[in-house]
Image (cartoon, rainbow over all chains, first blue to last red; front, top):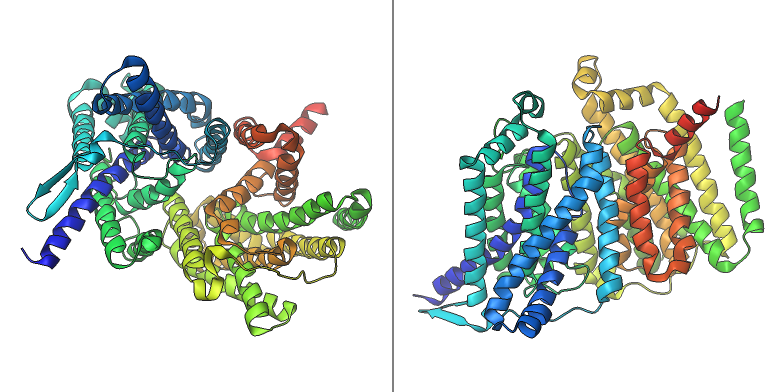
Amino acid sequence: MGDLAALIVQQSLNGVYLGCLYVMVALGLTLIYGVLNQINFAHADFVTVGAFTAFFAATRLATKVLGVPDTAAYLLSIVAAFGMGALLGLAVNAAVFAPLRERGDELRPLIATIGVSVLLENAQLALFGPIPYQFDSPFARETIRIGRIFFTGQSVLVVGVSALAIGALYAFLRFTFLGKALRAVAQDRETAGLMGINPGLLIGLTIVIASALAGMAGAMLGPVIVLSPFAGASVIVKAFAIVIIGGFGNLQGTIIAGIFVGVIEAFTVQYLGSGLIDLVVFVLLLAMLVVRPTGLIAERKEENV
Amino acid sequence: MRRAAWLLGAAALIGALPWLITTPYWRGILVLCAMNVLLALALNLVIGYTGQLNLGQSAFFAIGAYASTILIKSYGWNFWLASFAAVLGAGFLGLALAAFAVRLRGHYLAIASLGFAVITYQVLVNWERVTEGVRGIYGIAPPVRDTVALFYLVAAIALIVYFVLDNLVRSPVGDTLRAIREDEISAAALGVNSALWKAFAFGVGAAIAGLAGCFYPGFVGTLVPDAFNIVESFTMMAMVIVGGMGTMVGPVIGAVVLTFLPELLRGFGELRLMIYGIALTLVVLFMPGGMVQAWTALRARWR
């Protein structure tokens, strides 16, 4: 294999790994949009809270108190972050989305969640301080080598967990009664309500699932990004770009777009420098919107989720 | 007559404020407040009257600030000429964003405009040869001699802008913009060229935000990209919503409240911004029409 080919394969794999992380963040956004037609701006802070939860669960609770080995501790911390995300989802649904749902406008929940975001960000700033934490994943130390291609255990773990989460989400939406009911609510809330489905309950469930995914994404992002109270903000703008490129509310679109953006980012870092990532992603986004105003993968109004 | 009386009252209040507030710190907050009023008025034209979800307003504020400062510092232009050019530049970039608004709706436009702000911010960080990047531009002189004069200047401009916009939204142009906000398709059926009027709203909104930006560097003395983070767009949006969008007085009240609230909360230290966040959420939850509507409802109940 030539140098260039090896480089391209290597960066593509790095891109898929990054892309999976972004997909985990963006899926929640697109899920909420698909079912409620709302944007949750506090989603970024759910990611940060997830990352901090995982950090303390892994470094304090699991290894020190429970005395489990650090690999198991990290896996446990992902579960803990998932749970913490779910709790935040419950809270934001009860505080913002449920009370504002009846009024049916797109602006007010958006501003209300900006308020939630300011609250969460500054609560974390008060608790953890502005200095970044060093969150080491034990899996990042393992390096796997195939020919001239290298990857870390962490990337295998992230891709594996992401695939598992996406698979579980699909199975839930396709095969379970609740999942079918959720799709019915996404298609037509009023009619679903007439069929004996409780839309409020399913909307709450959607937000809980979306937020749990954000928390889990935080646990996996923690070792990659600079872990500070502002960590989520650096990822969320990209997640928004991904959601738009994939077509708002379109799950397959979001997954494809997430990996696409991850790969673009990997090659941007290789050839242009890491300072230009956001610039490249958003210029591509705007260019794409000129050509296809409803996203690269067109929005399907009938069955989004 | 009543409007003239209100305007005179506002002018008298502006004239009296620096006499009532005498500490340099709070006089500085007054200048900031006047700038925020300008920014909120600009955004309200786009969101409140035309119904276009624009999250990229911080970009125009940034362009006004950077363009005027660079023209003054690197090319030796005088403040007024540089500001005029910067306002024009911001206005034209507003037209560029309007090109997206013509094709995109609702949340798509929100994210596209957010992307516009992200790109602007990234250009400010990365184009170091011109903007000095994160190092920032230092030692920027204010256009007038002291804080009080700067306050009078910005407040007078805000008052003029308010007066002009107030007349604009009462004119047939205002009806046209509201028609686009309420139902774009029906408006088009009545012969409204919605692309043209959206471009108008975005252009004027961007130019006013750029105008506010011209005064910012001289006030702070330094210019760094972080002052124009996308969070700034959210703050402007919050001012419009908290005050009451789609009304003229609302954004002014929102700007005043959200400028002074964080300052008044300084005694709470770290809790300050947490309280701010909670307050913002509560206002949206319990005053859906903003403070103006809450006030009208309260008055109706009293009668």
